[in-house]
Length: 105
Image (cartoon, rainbow, N blue to C red; front, side, top):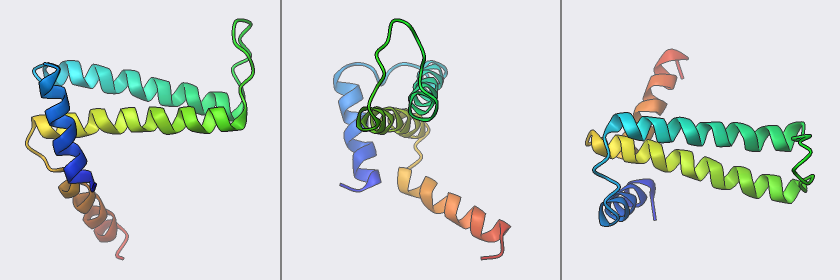
């Protein structure tokens, strides 16, 4: 499945659960929450949590957790893009064009 196909699948998944109707403002809040979880996962991996209520995690656990949280953040970006009729592949292409132009590549 490519990124545009995943975006379409994800949009359908959200619509089936009645989650898609939430406004972009609410979606942005969910994205912010997911970015916080990415931050926590990276902190755990890089410096640990040092929290008395938490066990020390293995590197494998940390990597899996980061993988999951990055996926969750990406999904929120894809849903936001879908709300504005922006195809995910178009986002990737536009990003590449912008960087190539900016750095004369």
